[in-house]
Length: 456
Image 1 (cartoon, rainbow, N blue to C red):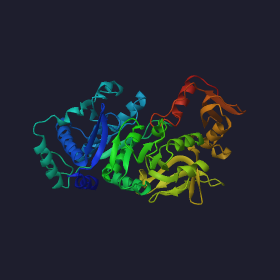
Image 2 (image 1 turned 135 degrees about the vertical axis):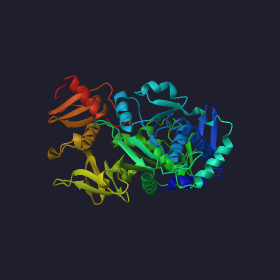
Image 3 (image 1 turned 90 degrees about the vertical axis):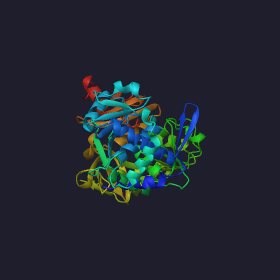
């Protein structure tokens, strides 16, 4: 199978002096052209070919560093299965995800190698820092390019493959309602999802991009855009970044408004009114596309964040190529949101989102999680969360859920209690490690059950 994404990227990158990546190394600012990046990818190909033997490789490099992306592209070229875990804070969840992925090797760098103790098991770890330490580099780079361009198979240094190989990328759901679920996208399927994102995200030809979502950053690089690699989103001001492709949690860390950003594409969690206010203040000059999506479906619906602010939980425009229906709607049209289409991961390309919602005049209104809501009494946890926040100024955060026949509220700060509700005060709420804006419901329920709180 010919990997069109890889073929197209090589044609665009070879001999291209435009800057592909900007990153900081100490006090220095490093700029890498597309041609230089391609050379580094081929060097990494040689390094990984000699030092890895399996197919399922966890990239435990410094989050979204330059080497992180060199490693991702190299694994695509070699037909390896790339595994990405967003957070390693919960050891039990990390162990469960690694077991699902059936890892053969783990790639580290100088920053992450000392933190190998966070990874359960005795899987081989390989520090990629030495991928350039060779004497015969340039001849192998050029030969590698020629071999790859002449073959319809994934590139492997020094030999032709007898059978085609296809790379894949495995990520995981956040697991806030249970164990994180593995989501695997083959390169051809990933190409379809990238096309889907491209149809929904507005790019300008000269955009400088700051991206912290692997698939979205891959999209930007494939499209020949310059990408800033930095853990500090405030660096966007220094480098005059014009396009953000980021999770919500990263925007919340902005200290000073990013005034050069003209377009933003974000999603990953439901936003409440106070969180929406905060994001609009931090991106005053930006058109912000806010996405309702899923790991299984990328982009389902979208809206402009200023419009969302005035009509909370409402998304105006359906993504082209995605079908949306409401399963078992009640008299008000509310039921579980189900998606289908060629870019949807699931049996027969269908996926039950686990969210309650309804369609009104082509718009999608999200009301709550099916697992923690109760349709027959019209209790939907997202709606009730917003009610609590709106009516309790001293409240820092609150999340509601229906369990064991009762409505529960986990909160921090202060609120006015109402009859019929069971309240659980936390000095610090346990958030989902992946998104940082969603409650880890499973952890809350487990902790409350273990400590014999009322209603458990």
